[in-house]
Image (cartoon, rainbow, N blue to C red; front, side, top):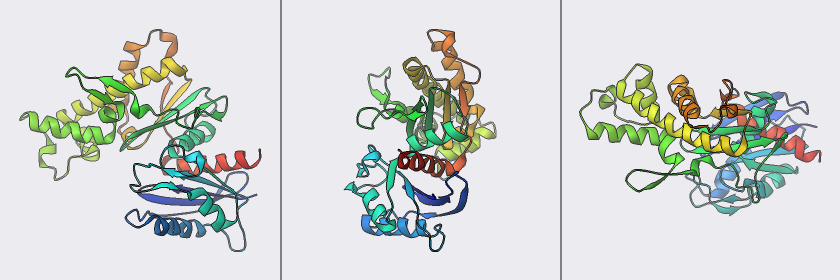
Amino acid sequence: MAILSIDFGGTRTRAAWFSHGLNMQARDEAPTPVGQPPSAVIARVIEIARQVVPPGQKPAAIGLCAPGPQAATGLILHAPTLPGWDRIPLAQIVADAFDAPVFMENDANLAALAEYHLGAARGANPALYLTVSTGIGGGAVINGALFTGWRGLAIEPGHIKFPLPDGRIRSLEDLASGTAIGRRAKERLAEGDQPSALRNCAVVDGRTVGLAAAQGDALALDVIAEAGRWLGLGLVCLMHLFNPQAIVIGGSVANLGDLIFNPVREIIAAHLTDPAFNDPDLIRAARLGDDVCLIGAAFYARARSEV
């Protein structure tokens, strides 16, 4: 029993061929042509996936990682990275193309599953996973199984709300994502004349702020620390709800390392109601890199097809 795994993202599409023992035997990736009509995009996704299927073979099951909420329905529903896509039956189209059952979930849920089985959260119960990059998503594994809630909408930490001193209500995603880091840096640059290498950057975004912070730029360090404090408050909420044994942080913002993790840990230590919630090893960096969703999709397809 071999498994075809597809990670269909708004920027890139990846595909891999796994043995039943979940050894990756072939892999390919290419840009996702998101500017084209859905039919053309899906045709390209299928073409990329075919590159990893050995000649004369077909998958016993397909794991499909897709953007947007309620991906387990097999439909693309209001995916932020795919404007204009709504109720597109992606899973059925892929199933028809390969004559194999397709099991579809969203990226954060499948990343959580992969990190639980093979990565930084191995064996932890409960295990939470957050991806912090352009936005903030999440997934949870409880008693070895994905927890997705009533309609598959559970664990959306980017939408935790916080009141600001000026009366506005902002989402965690608006305060601690890579996008938020870039926006906040621009605000700080406009507010004053503090020296910063960012003033010489043609583009100020989460990536350039991270690079400046790594070189010791004071303004960039302040912006990242502020984002880390907000992220820490979001994690405090999740810790009081789930009492997790591990929280794994992935995505581009996690690549900032201790620049983001230290303020996260400081806020957690200051705001938990009981130190028993905490542990020195609780907050962990993700380990599986760009293939995390491919691995998670393969695990998911194998488990679902064997039920």
